[in-house]
Image (tube, rainbow, N blue to C red; front, top):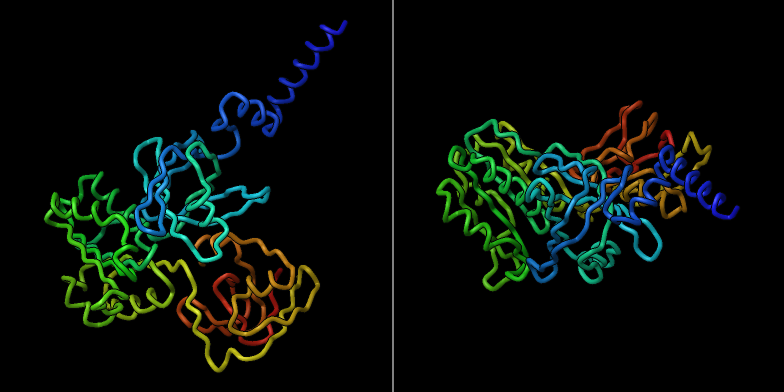
Length: 356
């Protein structure tokens, strides 16, 4: 009798697993923790430091991972101390089954510090769907790439993809890369090898806190690149760096930029508080001017949907029906009603009414 009950229990479990993805995942991961019928999972198979505060991880992917296009970003979901965290990183495709994830340590950054100090070979985590417009799409004979700090990671992805597709013999690629000190520079040996192999590729690294120090990006650097008016510009770095790029290269036919952090620049208009009316929640909350609306709402205990926190993934977008906002990436203001608003990269400049 007990044998029959056990067989029935096993049969019921298998039947349920066929129709229940969570159950199927449970049993599959008993066999191989990388298997899943639901999630794109990756496993760390190699870990190496590429700068004093930057680690590069080689990841083995399961069949549900979507590689995306060079230059795009992936949501990276990890579990740390029993809590799930989502961050956004640019990955480089190595081959059909492997990706490279490079992470720079951020002060007080829970996820970046976990990757730097605690992650181990064999650890498994989840990747979301790739997104982002700064991707490989060669339409001009010249490409100019400008990177600051960890903004080098999408450039690495783009350069690797161009090299793998055998296009470096056909287009000129110029890379300008800013870091604070020599110990901050990542992948310099790789770029040197590419430059030796392909005459069409050249790069320069600028050290802004060495002695003597190099200048931050300014008009004088325009003399270091060729044929700006016939070049596609790729730029990634802090928002202040990206804003400078957009000003200096406004005559280029295509300028593709992404900022990975907000520059803390305030103005006299950022003093005081404004009221934000949340129509779905039926709440009115006072938040400080000049601060990301997302951050302000989180400080009030709310949890709006969000993803990258950089204005790229659009997960935090909601409708603004009334009020004035300022884009923290480029400083532009928007006073028009009935506009879509990225709350992660905009601050409130007046009382707002938003659909949250």
